[in-house]
Image 1 (cartoon, rainbow, N blue to C red):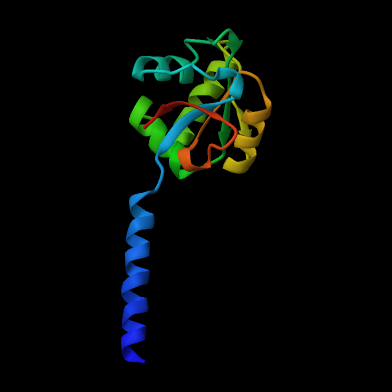
Image 2 (image 1 turned 30 degrees about the vertical axis):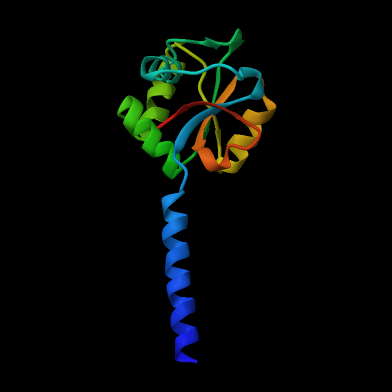
Length: 139
């Protein structure tokens, strides 16, 4: 009995390690109409900061969740801002007539769904959850 328990325990720990090793990374994903488009570091920054407003011939629609770990990690590594700072940046830009504010959703799932249904939409999400979207850049 103890041997069986020990084997199950070792197996469980091994499975947890494997699951942690294959965790997906944050990615910038977009509507399937953006298939074939990729962004380098400068392109990512230009799109997210509103300097580049079209991608693949479509007007970019930035879609965000109110909060999200993948979103925070991606924004921090590519533009040096948290989600809150990014949203404040866009509020100021919008108020001064410098751009269209991102569409903000309660959950990352809702944001992904909107991005999948909206031509030109981009969203930051965990790459493992990007089904139905085109990966434009990974962290």
